[in-house]
Length: 174
Figure 1 (cartoon, rainbow, N blue to C red):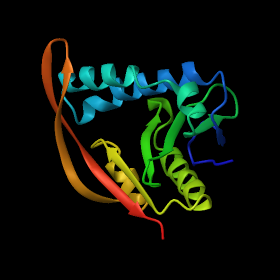
Figure 2: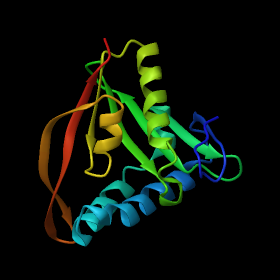
Figure 3: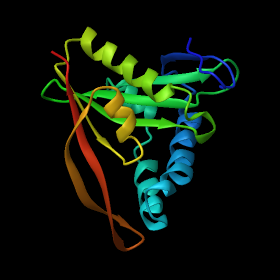
Figure 4: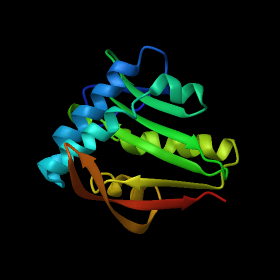
């Protein structure tokens, strides 16, 4: 259990369970749409959100070996999650880290990143990497990740190419 001063209560961290999908999809959608506008334009947020809707296949990803760590308050559905997958080179890819806006600033990102790292170390993953939004960079830096490069790319959305960026970050574990 983790608790944070001023938080609505304690949170438990656990692995994904069947039935979490709707809550995790909602966390992703709401976080991108409500928090994303702090650093990205409306067009960028719309394209980002649409892109992630297709990627939120949690049951399939868990069945394929991804570790999905969720934060759950003392009552109610999950409010934050991190998705760790092992790539073909044996490195750990932190593909998603999202927190519902009502539960930010309670230490959940830090706790989820720590849990993902503990899992990675337990299975001898030598390196973790991610593509962090501007909003997530600080959490990854607190966890010891370093920016490797800024990634500028486009997302096709509504018959347009929307320019957006994130940051390639990594952390060596051994």
